[in-house]
Length: 204
Image 1 (cartoon, rainbow, N blue to C red):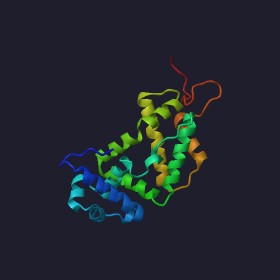
Image 2: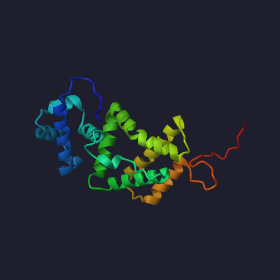
Image 3: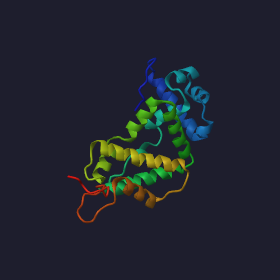
Image 4: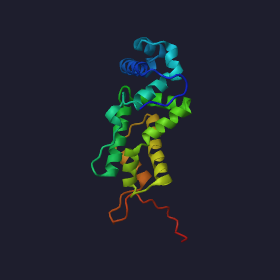
């Protein structure tokens, strides 16, 4: 799924060639050794062609991820029928990816791309907070919708990013604790799962 851009109309063949080249070089050399010049050379296009469409190599990698050329199925949420367990498993898989040889570089490239371009940041947020995550999170929160659901999604993903940036090690139990912190602990007494309480008596 392409990042929308203003300016000259892109050749789809050139776009595909550039993204394919970026992915190939990323896998071969890593993000730190990835250059616009190298991408242009492998893709058979001019360097300025890339710069007309993407302001940095981070933006090229961000679009490759959004286009499904990097991560692929690793972005998908599992669906076992247990929404809370699915969310915790998904977060655990993301941390396992972060610990992989290219995982940290992927995270840094996304952060850099979002920091450098508000458009890219908005697109990445919209992609992350897509229907699968929101649907599973809503189920875990007992059917929450609207601003409450969106705020919970921001908190969950934000917690993942902050922990990943710290480079600390986190396991499955930590991810379960994160889900509990955001949606509330599961209840065995029939109360809707994820129904948060403030401890403040109701005035109504």
